[in-house]
Image (cartoon, rainbow, N blue to C red):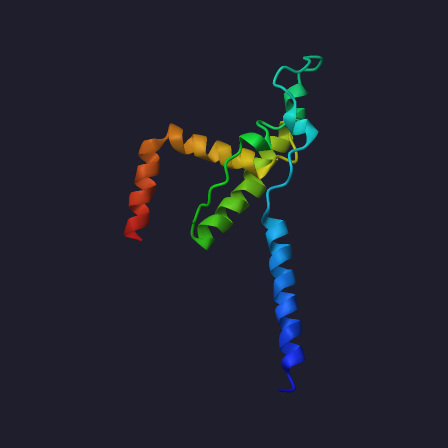
Length: 124
């Protein structure tokens, strides 16, 4: 047919897009800063602000499946409230894994409330 070359070009583009998407989704390499041991010099009281809470090597990638509206609300809260409080404390450029870690710790500290929210979600 006259469109064979068009189909081949589209297939090539799809393959390139899939490769780019895979590269984009892969976890970034840990930097030398992330691998520093916990025992750092205590020259300044703000030394803890200069390093991530934990290195990438300690992270576990797991999927979560919130509703789109819930995720949007979460990101708004994170952007407009949580990050502002952290900036006020002198912290910037926090990796997402640290927010997710704190979120899970919050849920573990409040299991009754977590159960309530699950039950409420079932009623909707």
